[in-house]
Length: 635
Image 1 (cartoon, rainbow, N blue to C red):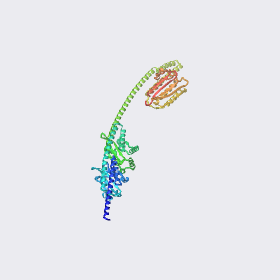
Image 2 (image 1 turned 90 degrees about the vertical axis):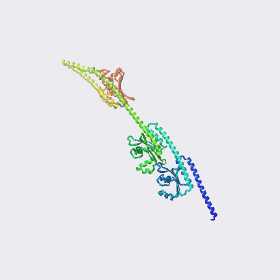
Image 3 (image 1 turned 45 degrees about the horizontal axis):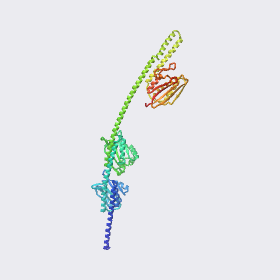
Image 4 (image 1 turned 120 degrees about the horizontal axis):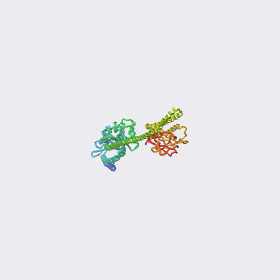
């Protein structure tokens, strides 16, 4: 080749290199412009990261890229956004401990960009990664995202083929990382401000809710629903059981009701013991908050529990958990649990501080509700005590009234007894004495027929006196008989009364008209006496008729039963109705209707024991109707 040709070739080569460099710089400028535009529209850290990674890959022709940010505890780097990578291949690198020697962690610790251009360089610098990098054949750049001396994370780009990073590339990537860091700082501050404003708005709403009611269940439910879903995915509030042996999930809130039911069943099968070594029980016991920023599948696998238990826990999708105590007056009154279901939304210390603030207010609400409930219980107890006292006073008043009524009745009966002793009993005694004297004279005069007549009169007087004495004994037994109330079959009482009357009045034709007879409430033996007496009177006082017509029916009223017994007998003068129920009081002569005047007095005495009444109606000569009222049990 001639010198002229060689000179021309060198000039062409230099011209081509200048053209490639110019084209290279122009591509960086265009990428820079696109990134600037994208970052100008980005308001959230995730949008910043996506713009930088995507545009950086396009500008340099990278195979893929990612941004790693510090974990909540500051002990590791977590890959938040990737582009161009297989998710399966990225999974093992999702969390990288800062102590592990890798290009990403080294760039973060040293705050210096790292450029690895060959596989040999990678294996030489990081021999511990030989297994992971055995298939690595390209190049890699790890750029710390810094503003002044503060590191926000690391931008990583990988290339399928080996390549060199010239000064233009390195300047572009460093500027790209710096711009990304500034955008991250700005968006993070904006996001933190928005989160703070949201938290303050939440606390204002929470305060309003807490002051709106003293019903504990509704308050805790409202607080939990304020948290879900805008600040958390799960919210569970535990309160101690009455025996303080377990923590009960009084409030469980999630957007999906099916998940709420599932968690309640899970807790029911796995109760939280206060003394148990678990997060909720430990927080309640120690009074200290706990946070698990990231929960991976590997962490689930490491738990020494059954596979069924692990499957249920995985279904809950708990990826970041905060558990904080609910304090009130220096004591732990419950536990508030918050959980998120995405790894890219890990809780940090700021979230713990906010959760403690919410828990503190909820704890005060629990204490206020407890005091309110205690006050209500005391009021109810006092009201109940007052009711019991009123009931006792009422009972005493009733007893005094009953005793007064009983005493009045006893006095009336005593007066009746005195009258009977002076009249009804004296008459047969007088007959006995006088006719016994006549019988003696007749014996002296040998007049046997006259003696026999006198003995008949003496016997009738003795029988009459015996009947009067039996009636008095019957009435006295009613006063001392024990009262035992229960459901009574009124129809059965009437049937028994019919049988007794058949024996008392054999051969007497009786037409019975019985209406529906429902069960009533009272003492069965006493009510049998009432029914039998009234039915017996109905047949006895209708004996002058060809056929006795007896009708029995019941009217069921709101507070009592009204039982009526009607006959077609001789009736009575309504002016003397009250005398019917007096002892030994009769409105008909003995020669017309037999009796001693004790049956209706017995009926009245029995119904008084039942808090009931008895009364009669008649127009005289056209039959009579006797009615008695029995209160229903609630009265």
